[in-house]
Image (cartoon, rainbow, N blue to C red; front, side):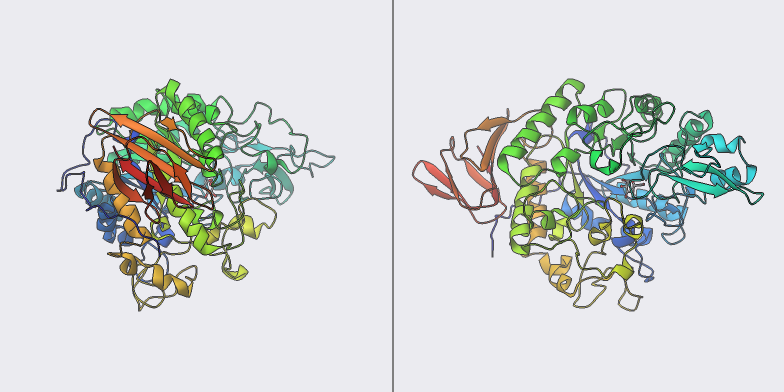
Amino acid sequence: MTQHLVVPAQSARSGGGEPAPQRTGWWRDAVIYQVYPRSFADANGDGMGDLAGIRSRLPYLRDLGVDAVWLSPFYASPQADAGYDVSDYRRVDPMFGQLGDAARLIEDAHALGLRVIFDLVPNHCSDQHEWFQQALREGPGSALRKRFHFRAGKGENGELPPNDWESIFGGPAWTRITEPDGTPGEWYLHLFAPEQPDFDWDHPAVADEFRSILRFWLDLGVDGFRIDVAHGLVKAKGLPDLGMHDQLKLLGNDTMPFFDQDGVHEIYRSWRPILDEYPGERIFVAEAWTPTVARTANYVRPDELHQAFNFQYLATPWAAEKLREVVDLTLEAMRPVGAPATWVLSNHDVTRHATRFANPPTDATQIRTPGDRELGLRRARAATVLMLALPGSAYVYQGEELGLPDVTDLPDEVRQDPSFLRASGQDGFRDGCRVPIPWSGAEAPYGFGPASGGPSWLPQPAEWAELSVEVQSGDPTSTLELYRSALAIRAAHPALGAGDGVEWLDAPAGALAFRRTHADGAFVCVANTGSSPVRLALPVPGRLLLTSGEEPVREGEETVVPADTTVWWSL
Ligand code: GLC
């Protein structure tokens, strides 16, 4: 079993019942924990997580040492895409609780010194949203239809979709409706599932509505928003054909007429002043899948959003040269706009990194085989310790601190991912990273909900009894204690956290080494991504702070770092 040093956890935050602390630029180095409400904690025992459950577990997050919590959507929704299909943006879905639960969650979090970020879904709503239902009723050319992308079909009788765009979840991005008089009618655009019609952001009512929604939650006290599909709101004028099939291959690699259009930036420039009116440095983080980190940097210009997930980093395999390249590209792209790099390894849309790294190297984010679990966990721990050493902010997805793998063998009949159900789409296996997390006990639901409650909405593997928070707490070799130590050291060490550069040191092939310097102390990180130990002649070795695996060995002037291990030193 691997070993790492445990440094006593030291809270960098003040407690008490006050509002969130007012540290300037807190988000420049914040560690933000993603809660997936369906799968975090189930207070009422219906097998589905809820806001009351999340509230009850906030002290765990404070003790873990994160700065903020981002919650995936919990709004009123028919759940065609696990809540990313919103039917009422100002209501909490009864399956998660009520508005009062959201307000109390924010209060409790603030009392613990944690900030709270909600998920805003502005690209599309649910087909059950009042506007869309009314648009269907009103007929072609009506006012409400103009808030969406309704078009006549092509072909003799309008039987073909208006253009050749494909849905991210598979199949055409258009669905034909039946008009109120019973005849086959117009088509509407949905980049995702047919239950998720895209808004037409050229319509002023759409923009007004979202400004009002922002204020609604800001008034409730939320500290910021993650913006879902931030790159999708504006479509190229005239909705031009792409002229090809298999368009998903282009995603993230090329410009598309429906993604990363320059017009989206105007929207964010109009949102920023609203956020800035509110006290307490509230923030926006963009979910923007763009072809390059340079394009991502456009979203975080000073008058736009604060952070944008670095998906290029997420998709980089565990290989030193590739990692170094993406770190350099990222820091170079962010420096001129003055935004922090925002590192992330896992979220609710991708295979957990413990499973990605258990499989042969790939830049794919969906993997369907468990691979070599032990190897995957060793690399995942090393990858996290590397990520937390990089300058900027970092996101942690619930359960990665327990070293959870993806559940790759869920039976098809329990899967709920709409792209799985549509069969041909991207990301069809996202349920595997959404399985409720184990807290305690020897039997399912492992403290996720009360033992007397119903089965969890996705079944938990029996092996997860060994991975629970209860089992891992206090075990210095556990992944949970590794995260706790890493976050405590990160908060306390002056050279860690915010910054816009690293100083690379010489390292043998397969490894990377860098120094970060601060007036009050310097820091060195070495990551060995190879499968055998590497020897390095490090400058003054300093004090060993943390290792993701076995301890490095000092041999004369050299330090030997074990395979698939990241090590931190203080100089
Ligand atoms: C984002 C969400 C994902 C969702 C999609 C459509 O990518 O992260 O879960 O399916 O948007 O809303």
